[in-house]
Amino acid sequence: MVVIIFLCAVVLVCAVRTVVFGMKRRTFSADTLKAAALDPKDLERLRKLVRIKSVSHQNPEDRDLAEFRKIKGWITGEYPRLARTCELHFESPLCCYLIWKGSNPSLKPGLFCAHYDVVGTEGQRWTMDPFGGDLFDGYVWGRGTLDTKCTMAGMLCAAEALIGEGFVPERTLYFAFGGDEEQTGNEGAGTLSRIFEEKGLFFDYVLDEGSIVAKDMIPGMPAHIALIGIAEKGIAKFRLKTACTGGHAAHPPRVTAAGRLARALYRLERKKAPLGLTKEVRLFLEGLAPYGSLALRILFSNLWLFKPVILLFFSLKPKMAAVVRTTRSITVMRGSDKDNVLPQNAEAIINCRILPGDTVIRALETCRRVIKDRRVEVLADDPGSNFDPKRAGSLKYFKPLCAAVGAVFPYAPAVPHLVTATTDSKQYADISSEIYRFVPLVLDEEEVDRIHGSDERISLINYYRCIVFFKEALRSLS
Ligand SMILES: [Zn+2]
Image (cartoon, rainbow, N blue to C red; front, side):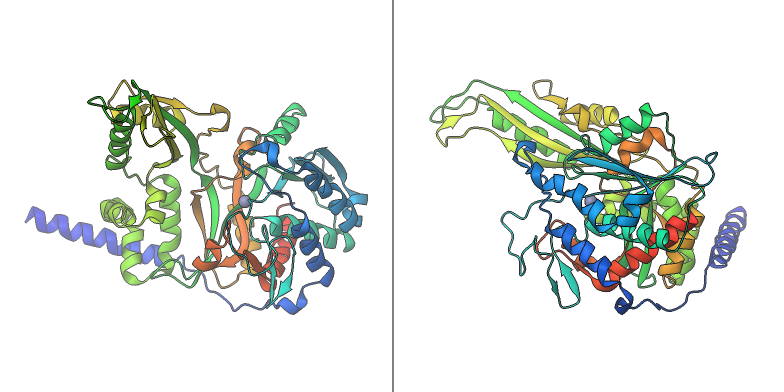
């Protein structure tokens, strides 16, 4: 009898929660934006930016700083109203910022950021010149068109247009651009963050690149979902090192350095970090709940009951598993250079992406515990480029941001999202507690794969959406 009453109570709570979450469902309207409305001047601005070969290399000495210096001429030449209205600070070829003075100095400033460096194209086959900025088939082609020269050009086009309309922001707005995000971000956004800190600045919010409007990516959900990054996984590189007597390959010892390293790596891969549903992922699932099929609505409205099922489901696919666990990827391995010589030293790099709630130090200690071999040293590699995860703030600006998203994407529910990659915004975590990461583009899986891949290109309609979004965001967040 008690069991029946208990089961009835569980079913009742589930049903009530499902209905309550269902009531939060917003109604949507159709897409009205047309690429034909894109100003040809704005189009040229992006094409010119793509032609600047601001490529970040693994070895910083390989980059062509003369190309990075062209950013100054691009901003001052392409955005004359902005150049007249804002204070321009070109700190180095790798970073610059603009200050657009607001009418109310008592309000804390807001920060819009982007990066203008891009990854290289070595070993890739491209249909068009990756640095040609060609216009073909309704797309601007080239490296950085999606990541993230589109947002840099887009937010400046929006500001240029608003100045032309006589708009003055109430709060002071900063635009900050870094030129080394594809490496560590330390020389670009890191430098700017230190400058802002020395000036005693604290931003009411930061808006950087991050999540997108995902198209046909989440089964059982509407075709379009606007994912607004409210948190970001941490990043750390750990170096595993082990030494052993080397010598001739003809008479190896019982255990070699390479064998010991391989055993350590095997243990790390076999014993994965535990699954966990962070506050940020709960907000994501509960945000999706009103829009899902009945089965998903029941599941996502009742995480208190179905958490184990959801974690199991997420763990099945790598992209989803990355949202619910700290991941460890073995990326680099080194041993002997010669096929007949035993390595005296063997080493590997683990690229670790850390879930909010965990830390770099704890992830390092966990690796040591899992490897369980004192002869394998596990060290934080390049500690200056390791970052703890960044948790969600109070979400004070989530609503106004959703309003800007809704104005451009009235057909897409907007939900909070955990960004599994890293962005420059992590550099600003000490000078703002409200960081949002959003790229206002509709992208499907194929288009997402072109980021850092071959034939990266942006459709004209997506670029137009980007400009319209920033006009809305600059207005609603000022
Ligand atoms: Zn990027």
